[in-house]
Length: 214
Image (cartoon, rainbow, N blue to C red; front, side):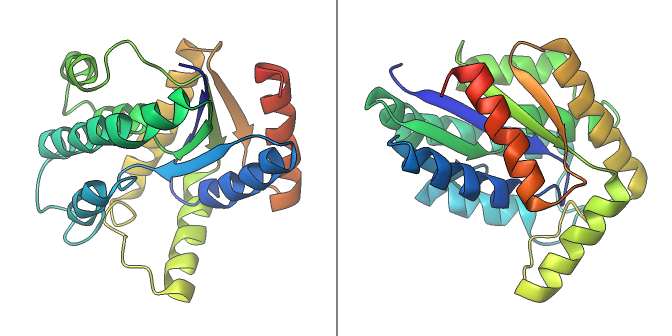
């Protein structure tokens, strides 16, 4: 691949979408070709899958069904958007990728879906491909959820299916992301998201420049 793939991960209310927008603006000012996306929902078909996953009753289907839907969305996302953009030399910034599936469907649900199952689905849907850099934004779950619910109220957002899960789920989720980062330190960087937007943006720029030479 000619381009680069940078993913942003973390629990609810960490500010991923805001920071992706700021990084996009920064990189474009540097003359880079940048494509932004998200999971689920980075493609037209993906938007339909997103509605199923993030809206409605939190118990409408189980963790296994969620994992299957996420990987279906991911395969379409890769083949229709991420890989074509990278082949043209673009830097692709994605709000979530496969680490979220491992964090939510394995750690969040207290190992209800096995790592072996998720790794097999990864091999089928993704293959050997991995992000060049993963930035994990970390915050206390209670603070993150408060941010997320406040944003939903102000913007009339209805994508609250995962926010509706209990606090144990969100603590498991946070621990999962930290374990993922610990297992792959060459790819993952954990940043404290409990700070101003401007200060976090500065931290992200430093990581991107140091890790990728941009």
